[in-house]
Every structure is written in C-alpha cells, then in structure tokens.
Amino acid sequence: MIKRWLLICAGMALSISFTHAQGMIPALPSAAVATSTAPVQTLLIGQKVPEALTVLDDQGKRRTLLSFKAPLEILVVYVFSGTCEAEQTVIPQYTKLYEKFKDWRVAFVELRNGRPAAPGQWSFPKVTDDSQRVYQTLGVQGTPMILVLDEGGSLRYRGTLERGVLYRTSISQALDAIIGHVQPVTNPEPAATLLCPAR
Image 1: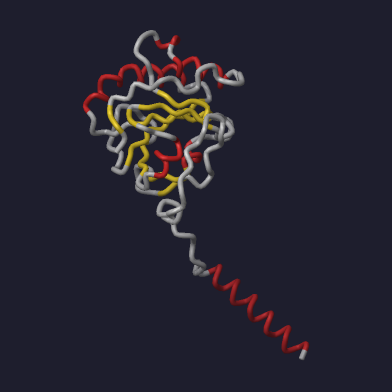
Image 2: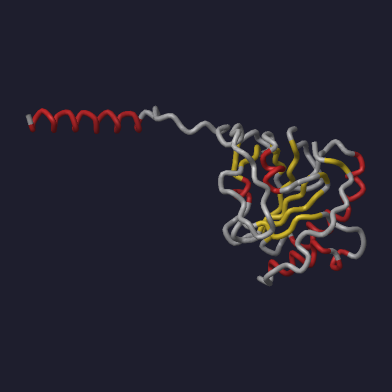
C-alpha cells in the first residue's frame, strides 16, 4: 500500500515537471485586470496606486502603470486625449517641464484613454487606458492633466500645468518637494483648468 502511494506521488511529480518544461501551465489572462467589473475607487492624494493597475504600451503589450518607473524614481503621467485641438496650446509648457525634470530621477509617460497612443511630442512611453479603469482610479476628469507618483507609488499630485513662469507653477513646486522628500506637497490638487472633458 505504501509503495503504491509513493509510486502515485512520483508519477504526479513527473507530470508536473513535464508540464512546466513544455510551458503548458496556462498563464493568467493579460486582460483579466482590464476586464474586471469590480467597483473602481478613486484614489485620494497620498494613497498608493494599485500594483495591478494596467495599461497597454505602444506595442500593444499589457503592463502595470508602476512598471514604467524604477524603484527610486518618481513617475509623471501626462494625460492627453490626442483628439482635442485645444491641448496643442499647452505642448510647449509641458515640454519645458519635461526638459527641466527628466534627469532628476523622474520618469515620464503619456496616458491616453481608450484609443492607441499615436506618436507624440516626446520620446518617453505612450500608453493607453483601454479599460477606463486607470482614468477612474487616478481621478482624471479631463485633459490635459498631470499626475505625479512618488518613489513608493503613491499619488502625490493631481492637476494641470498653469501658464506662466515654470518654476512658479504648482506642478514644478510639487516635483521639487517630492524630489527633496518634503511632506506634504503644499498644493497637491490645485483647481484644474481642463480644456477637454474626459471621454
């Protein structure tokens, strides 16, 4: 009886080993998170972005939003619709912000909603929220908008980039504070001037 039980266990182990070797164990579907119907809770300033929050990169591959930053990096998310002409008026100011902070442990990504991210103004990654869940989780109400996640992946800023002198803007001051590990950011959620409603 014992010998028979041992033979059964050995057979199961060999079967599992063979299955692994052949790559036959099915992976979790990449769209599992995106197609979830669970209620979406909008993050408050200071709350951490869920590890499972995913987007499609410009190659059509599903990745977590947090994978676009290194462990000690801050992530700035530019939110654009890509279809609203009014957004073009702010491109120069957004470019200045990128040039100022791109070498200061700050990663950038451009997020669009529900449509493939076409080539844009910048060299950093373009990603798509194909599920609407990223917009809802991060509290995006329109575009253009800027979100800032700190080194730990917590939402530290949600707003827009005001016109005028760059270093006086709320987002520039917020990034200076986050880079310098100042807690909390003075104005983490300024009144946003959204040129285009979120779709």
